Length: 216
Length: 117
Image (tube, rainbow over all chains, first blue to last red; front, top):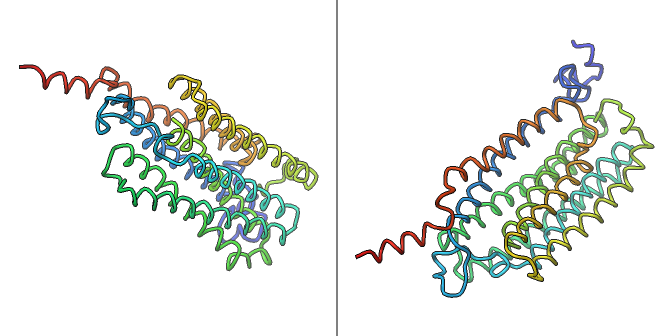
């Protein structure tokens, strides 16, 4: 056993709590950062496709056939709803970091409350997004309608799936997964931290999606 | 953050609680600024892109530095992210560099050719 594996959990799975000598981090944290690096490349590729498609045609203007130009997001998407979702997601980022901070302060009840707030925020985000999607479908706007909608639904849909993924993990952490706090509080805190890092990344992606799709 | 750093002490954590709310306020102000600039339409399209992306970069940096604690992280994470950022820009710009000469011209060129007798 490594000299760094001074915690009980590290005997079963190395460095779930204590730092790995190679990285100075517990393995879960280094793992989630590597995962986020791959996520940057995934969204980077899609952003690249968006920029390429958008710059390949002129912006829509009077007299230009709408099938042969790129519309401005603010003309066909709801800025108030997207702004609301931005605020909700930013607040959820604060909520999850407050949950982690309260766990570090041994305030489990408060931490759990902040995790529930994060869950409510993610549900609110998804509700607004589904309303937006429903409205677009009612108007007959589908991914096949125009490259703009193909990009819009792909980017926001993939982002929405990430929100669903985070929601599932948060639900686990406040229900069945919360039992871990009784026996291994530090390991549980690390799980919340890793999920929080993922959640902040989801927020970060939206920070770029919002102006790119809705405001330009 | 199980390894004991100074910024992981209860005192430091209590201080950071206030910081998180300040960052939240800053993010709201920046969001409002982005929306106001876009709604007022006083900028050209290219100026609007530059402003919106600049604000998004500042907001992203605030989230990464304070909420994700990148302001005081281990070298392993900085090394991973440096490589990621380099590859991200390669991924973003290489396809564009290969298509530069056709920017905004594809449709017009096609329609011009269709009028050639």
